[in-house]
Amino acid sequence: MSLIGETKHNILRELKNGPAHGYAIAEEIGVSSGGIYTHLNELEEEGMIAVTEQREEGRKQKYYELTENGKLLLEALGVD
Image 1: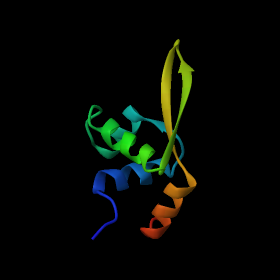
Image 2 (image 1 turned 135 degrees about the horizontal axis):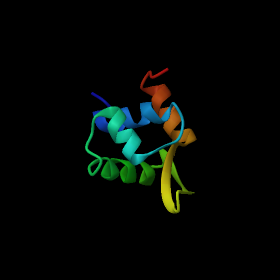
Image 3 (image 1 turned 135 degrees about the vertical axis):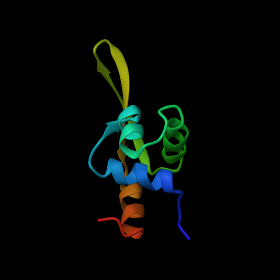
């Protein structure tokens, strides 16, 4: 039994490499770019990730990164 679903687990593992935007995360873990945001929003609400906005090429881009709680969860799940 896992504490979180496979998609959320994969998102957290991907963010262990550093901040990324939703589309890049979706491509890396093989999830639709539309579906990834539901998981990202839930992880943010759960305090596992944080969101920052940056301006790129004249538009706002949201970047997601692990919080300390997200790092602790990965550690508890045995992700190096």
